[in-house]
Image (cartoon, rainbow, N blue to C red; front, top):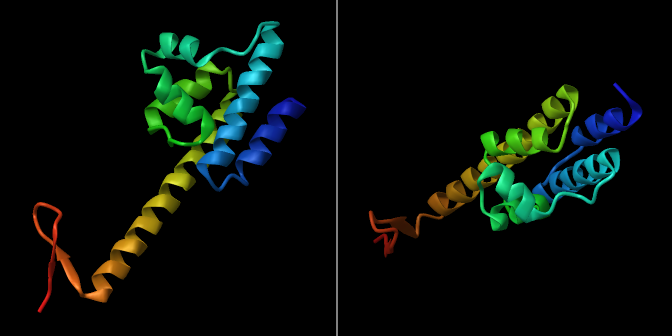
Length: 129
C-alpha cells in the first residue's frame, strides 16, 4: 500500500459523517485527475459513466446524500480506489448509515415515549386521550 492509500485508509477509519466521506471522495477524484494528468471528472462526466443523474452525483460528492451501497462501490471504483481503500471507505459509509439509523430509532423512541401522538396510516397524528 502506498503512502497516499495508507492516508485514505487511516482517514476513512475516522469518518463520522456524510460530509467527511464526501471529503475523501473529493480527494480520490483529485488524485485520479493528477495520476491521469487530466482535470477531475465533472459531475456530468461521472453521471454519463454511471447512468445516474448529475444532481445525484453532486449530492454524493458534497455530502448532501449518502449513496446507496451499490452506487458507493461503483463510485469509488470509478475513482480508482485501491481494494484496501474500497474496504475502508465501504466500512466508513456503513458506519454513517448505521449511525443515522440509530439516531432515527432514537427519535422514533422519543416520540413514542412522549405518548401524546400516534401516527395513523396516512401519517397524520391524532391526539391520544
